[in-house]
Image (cartoon, rainbow, N blue to C red):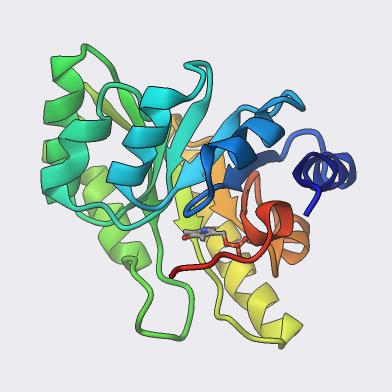
Length: 219
Ligand SMILES: *Cc1c(COP(=O)(O)O)cnc(C)c1O
């Protein structure tokens, strides 16, 4: 795997306004540094503990994205430094992020994860629940957390039309919310297998792991 070559190739083929988040979960620090040395700064992880260990040891100008499901009791470990939390799915979690961010006098940017895939193993909320959160007085009173957009994962399938349908649905929802909420800037959709489709459908941020770092080994 030539990590530097992979990342440069992907960046060259995507539109300039689309942000690439390199998903480095399970990968060693040297792999991250190879990508970093090409000038890349956005990296993503799905476990708070792993991300925090990497944050402690790697250059401090890396922007760390939490893309996995977040347990409330672990928010405190990343509140000091996290750039964007992609998978917020409850008001309770937002409250905890707000509370922990206040300790560092920061405002943490978050995305609401919308469930667009068929599989019921995937996390996420429906559009009505997302709207309820955005409209709630609880959220509106929070001053250390800001919802800046939506995130979604499409069904794992070879059927391009199905993936397109799901991403297009998310894009329509994003546009509707964007016209109502000024803070909306970011639509996080697309992974190694489907980021080209996601960009066609209006993604502004893609999360790519294996196409940059190679297959993951979980042993
Ligand atoms: C692992 C992961 C990715 C990257 O997946 P690849 O298929 O390796 O590109 C993207 N998003 C989330 C939420 C992930 O957990």
